[in-house]
Amino acid sequence: MRRALVLVILALILVPPVSAQTVTYHPDRATFQKFLSSNSSYRVVPGTDGWSKGWAYYVDARLGTIKRHGDETLVLVGNVYDNPRMKSLWRITGLPENASLLPAVIVVNGTVFITGTKDNIYLTERAFSSLWNPPTASTVGFGLLALLVFFIFLLALRKDKSHAEAFYLVIVSIFGLWYLTTGRATISTPFLSYVLQGVEFAKGGSPSSPLGLILGMFFKVIPPIEENLIYAHWILVLLIASFSFYIVPKRSRELGFLVFGLTFSAPVFRYFVHYVDTTTLGLVFFVSTLAMIANVTFSPEKGKALLQTLLLSLLTVLTVAINPYFVLIPLAFIIAFPKRHFRNYAYLLLTGAGILLLYLRFGLPIHMPSHPVDEPERYVLNLLLNTALSITVILYAVLHVGRIGKMRGQTPFLALLALAYLPLSVFVQTLAPYCFVILGALATRLLYVLTPKT
Image (cartoon, rainbow, N blue to C red; front, top):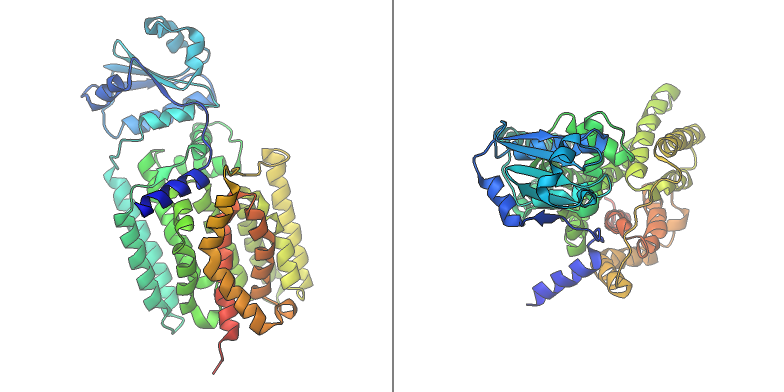
């Protein structure tokens, strides 16, 4: 009972707000379910607009996992103002034409109408969300990709001649147990709008956000079905866990287990990454940026150093593209690493140019993701409770080290990020999962500083 109460409170506090609109059914949902379970073939007819063609691509791919193509059932996507075929058949629904602007699934006389506009048709995904029929190619591909990630990190950690690979095996075992025992990951409603941008781009349209562009490139190769999104989501979670070993001191890779423990043991963090949302992809880019900063010794050769800086700038720009609040990363970097002036100027210039291109391409100002909290007191309390162990370790270490302000390198870099983003996460919910990583990595590094070296 107590566990159920905690889950309810988490849901009330942390679930992003959804659109006031919901998908409706005519005459009822049972009729649509009957169509899904029937043996009838189908043919999808999109409208003329890019968003309509993109969503028809999704519908075709989704139905293709359970049905065969044919002419027995006509599936019309869009609304009467962009789909001429829908307009010609709309009279059989008995509904006014402006009803086609609402997100709805209508089944009449062997014809299926999937209606809406660019601003809401993605909500009709909920009509298909109960389906789970992953293609064999997707399942095999997911398994092979997970194994590839596992072996790459395992072999890399083994070369460090430490016990890090043993701890990594434990982490992967925990990850596998979590995957097998947890419920199916849920696609958040806000994320569906990016899915629409992605399928629109995949069909020749133009995305209105960096994430829409990334998803569109993914959908050009991989069918835009929920199974593939959820499989990709779990690969990203595995990458986040794996990079835990590369945001700790080089000489003690095994401490990555502590970062993983401090981060993934928090119920709120697991709650965030259980949703297929912008969080997991943003965290992958973020931990990749931290890993590069922690591990790359920039070459004194200007050509090689510039190439390394270019890669760091690219990772930073990708992080900012998903969560624009991290535009402060370069500033924290040059404060924590003040000596290499050429590298710092190049990093600022390249990163600034990349962010400027994002702004010019996707609009000014770029959308700042923020999910208002209905009960801020409870949200802050849960955030503090879930980060209490990391914060306690950090405070203890600071009291004993006493010179963190004079330090240079990764530890003060993480400290600056914590000082900037932990208070901001109280107001910007999307920053919370990043703060778990920052605090876990900072606590681990401070423990390493306190540990006597032999």
